[in-house]
Image 1 (tube, rainbow, N blue to C red):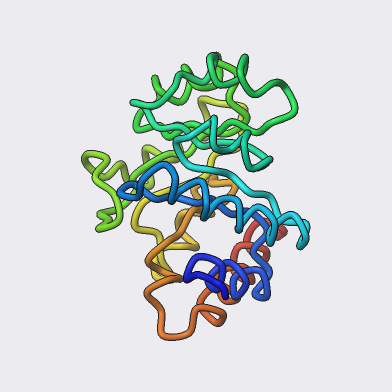
Image 2 (tube, rainbow, N blue to C red; image 1 turned 90 degrees about the vertical axis):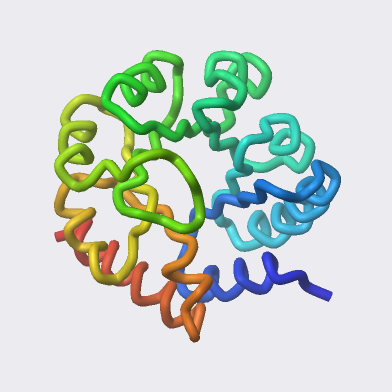
Length: 194
């Protein structure tokens, strides 16, 4: 029997999503491991990229493609020495200085935000589109925009230079998860390709 995370991942896969991050801030480490193990099997079989939030050890234990680290997590340098060069390391950043530090530390991409107010995560004041533009100009790494991104602001975020977006509520809270994900994928592809 599939869990809610697996069902959501399958619907998003069907809609064309190819990069997934599992984020669980309240579960036990064992529950996070169990969920990640099931997701790793599903996503690997589908050819998608799977990133585990916060836990480099769990990412390695389930053979995920990488880890996404917050400012209070294991430093990117330590994660790199532990995980090796073949794994993806992303770092959440909230300023140009943090984005540059993540780049210097060997991150493969930076998440920048929160761009807008979000109920999913408390990461300080929203950064807005103009700060996203500044970060895009400051770093050479891919920049994924995070925080409060939805259908109403997606195009502005992409035009400001984001290489991709991380969304939770805009898809998971939608009446039809597949349709919400499909619409976002289509719009991202149209904007980034044009």
